Length: 180
Image: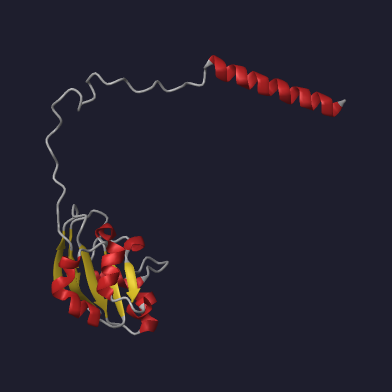
């Protein structure tokens, strides 16, 4: 079992795991069942995981593209971030599970990765989003000399009333001509 701390404010770190299952068992393991059962989430030990962001990659389906090339192309992972693990990544067979930061839905959590998953690595730079100080200038607080926001229409404009009256008149005329 491997423990990994996921920072909920991290928007750049991608986690790559290898899935050691026969091809016929991959779909059942990686997709949430209608009952809410999700073996992948349990094997990751995740408290929060968004299925729509989990990428299960059949390495064979990549064809001539290597898995490291896929990570660079599909997820914009810098080549320098993959450099130390490139050979190991490209030797993987079967299926890989790619977990971009969006998969964790901004939730800080500790993963406890267990079989049939194996953590290959995490790639990218973790840059937490820091909260800055509150704006001090009048303009930043919306009290400056900028023009006020446009007034929202209440639907009582004279032009709108005129257009609606004209449409009603035309409809009445068409109806009268149809009855005559």
